[in-house]
Image (tube, rainbow, N blue to C red; front, side, top):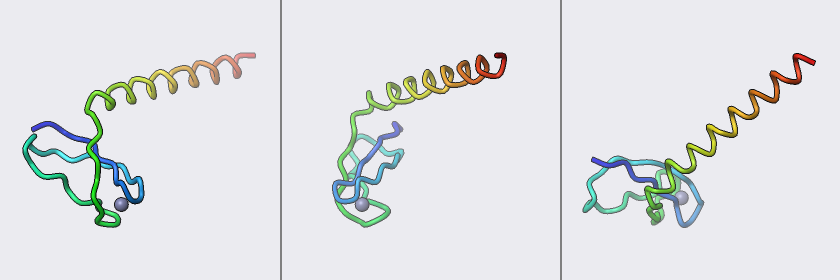
Length: 67
Ligand SMILES: [Zn+2]
């Protein structure tokens, strides 16, 4: 089953849930309101950006120490 990412329309809480394509959207675990499903294409894009950012920061720190 694919993992979908949901965002609460009421409190903006973000969470992931593994479910079938035809399953109903789960309620927000924080406030119980209706959630919107985020396009799955946005997930790897976000993680890739975060990884690049972390690697860049690590390089910057290393350079700073060597000085
Ligand atoms: Zn909520």
